[in-house]
Amino acid sequence: MLRSLRLQSWSLQLLWSIVTIFSISNAIGQEFKIDADYRARGEYSHGFGTLIQEESSGALFVQQRARLKFGYTDKKLSAYMSFQDVSVWGDHPQISAQDDNNSLSLTQAWVEFKASDYWSFKGGRQVLSYDDQRIFGGLDWAMQGRFHDALLIKHKKNNFQFDLGLAFNQNGISRQNTLFDPNNTGNVRAVFDYKVMAYLWLHKEWNNVKGSFLFSNNAYQNLNGQVPVSGHVQRQTFGAHVKITPSSHWKVLANLYMQTGEFVEGVDLQAYNTLLEVNYKPRKTTFGLGYEILSGDDDGMANGEISSFFPIFGTNHKFNGFMDYFYVGNHANSIGLRDLYGKVVANLGGNSNLLVKAHYFSGDKELANDSYLGTEIDIVYSKKILPYATLKIGYSQLFASDTMKLLKNVPNAGNTQNWGWAMVVVKPNFLTWKKK
Image (cartoon, rainbow, N blue to C red; front, side):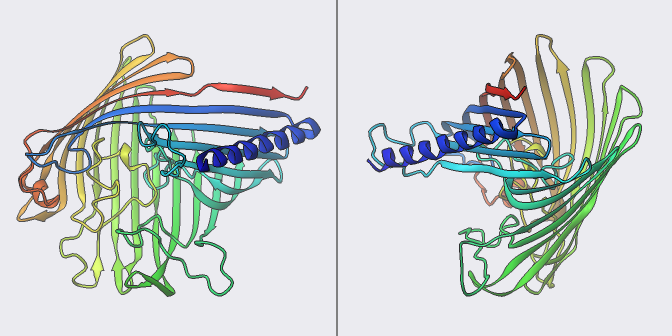
């Protein structure tokens, strides 16, 4: 009964939103669209995210996302709303009266006012994604994605643009103070649980060069144990991303970022991240070679400083191996990482391609007098089966060293650490209405 009432309430709200947008469109609108994003991914996990013990069995499950998107644009206004349900097949009993997993959510809701041809203001819940998504990314691999509640001042003219973003978070309406509880049990004051954020992104394009500069300051509520108290920890992340295409066959990517400020109360932060990747595509096959360093720390803040870099809001699944051993809810305040990798992307024809990527992992700092962590092989086959549908199949295997077992605290790890998955992504357009 409760689930039925919730669904009825949500359906009425959704219907009202559609009616409201259509009313606006009939008055002054230019375009209104309804789109969907459905994806289902089946996974076999036997060492994904961390090492699995010798005597443990792998896991098999299917998770899915169903997202409904509404977009409206005219000469002065853009508006966007999206709702999604994220679930695992079988997590809701067939005849249960309650939706215990609370899987339905509002993912985006924003409006953008165009003040002129070059200036606009955008506010609400939205995706913040820049450059190669190393620092700010939409995290679309994760079924839930990543979103921020923020106000943006945007400027774009010719080959130059910038975004100035501001965010202020609270747990709810308070009439007495503005303390913010990170509300992240087990991982207090995670990097994404900021109270205040201000960032600036500058981007410029030349003939064969695209360059960006990013500065972000994040303020986190001071804590006494796990209780929020007055005061803030301030952390800064800043640096540059460059993309160079000297010819149609070559592409060079480079990142350099720094982190400063405080890690926690009384602990200074000084860390860096650098990446260089070179890609060569003579015909239909791309060959790439890259090296990335994320600085680490070997004394765990014992001297009042820490030098471990963490990509704050990035799509970290995209980097450092698809098995997510590093910086995907893990590997913070640790020995850092050095990732030497090579890749081949082959166009197989028929709207399909094959990616093969190899990583050689080492810690930026040594652990037990050794830095080598292991080697990972990632294979992904992709095929566009319809104009709005894609099939992806992947397999990854990690060959872990004894140092990796020590790092992950799994001394009796099994010899085989692997992960396989298959995913279908369907993104149909249900309706496009344009005022004539």
